[in-house]
Amino acid sequence: MNTTIVIGLVFGDEAKGKVCNALLSKKNIFGNNKYDICMRVSGGSNAGHTTYHNGRKLITHIIPAGIFHNIKSIIGNGCYINVKKFFEEVEYLQNNGYDCRKYIKIAGNSHIITQEHLDEEIGENKIGTTKQGIGPCARDKYARTGIQAKDVLELKPFVIDLYEELFYGNNNSNILVEGAQGFYLDIEDYGYNYPYLTSSHCSVAAAVMNYIPYNSIKSVIGVCKAYDTYVGAKKFQPEGEIFNKIQEIGNEIGATTKRKRQVDWLDLDLVKRAIDINGVNMLVVNKMDVLREIGVWKLYGGGFLEEYKTEKQFKEVIKNVLGKGLDKIIFSYSPEKL
Ligand code: IMP
Ligand code: MG
Image (tube, rainbow, N blue to C red; front, top):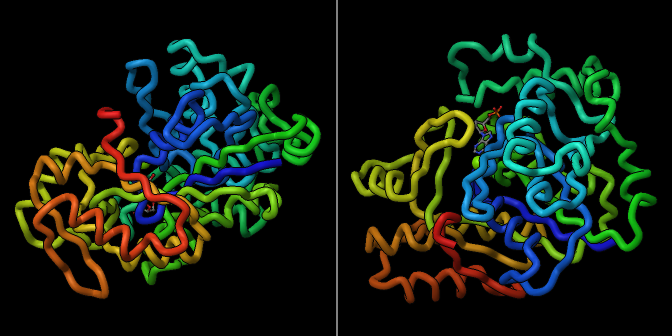
């Protein structure tokens, strides 16, 4: 078994979907990989993965990107499933020509979001969740009162035993783990953001908690953008018209909630910390085109904000601060510009 893991290094929305799609394509910037399985290991309908495939824009929430490439697409035990939304997504993808019945598998022990979980999130909430019932579902999982996928009749055709599937379902499985959200939203609170977090694991550890043996992990690809964004109730965006401009040009709007994402300059200290803790060996910095259009390049480093005159200088600083120990840094663009 060979595993590649793609994770968000900051607060989600780093365009991980684009990176996963590139990896799953036959010819790609990462070389000649071939995957047999693509697996989601955390999150649920709170995630919004925007994919540009064959000239079309497609938004998914729970179904892994493998579906766009006709490979086995597994929803792992760490995910939270809204059954109604799952079937809506299946229909949407089927209508777009993707064979969901054949390729989608669901770990029998993944947890189900119920109507009660959704009802609990109606109205305003303190941390600004996506209101998809994620927190209440996670609470019931850990209180050991939750419902699992294997107990839902309509899901039966999709349900698998994850152990059997991963270890005996394929010979020489090459697995791509598609992370959801970002490291600083992880429930384990790696960045002093508690309680402004989601209720699943967004770190590399999520893969290991979804039956991936640690010694099968060959590569951890960390993804960030040329600037930071965050959605939630915490005040994040500093004063300044420029952030509204980045928001607009970068089209920084939540794929699930349609909320505007708050914007700030990229914080290299946060990215460095995420690289170290997750054992990232390859870094992708997305959306370089947005700052190019704005014509301003700034970075936080060592607690200070510094401005750079050119994109070249900006890249050099990123390479100098983050490059040590990495095999590769890839500077890339917005998904629709790829
Ligand atoms: P929840 O995951 O709906 O409980 O929301 C908890 C926090 O995580 C909120 O600040 C959400 O905006 C944030 N969040 C959840 N999923 C995503 C995502 O896919 N991208 C960005 N932020 C997210
Ligand atoms: Mg997203």
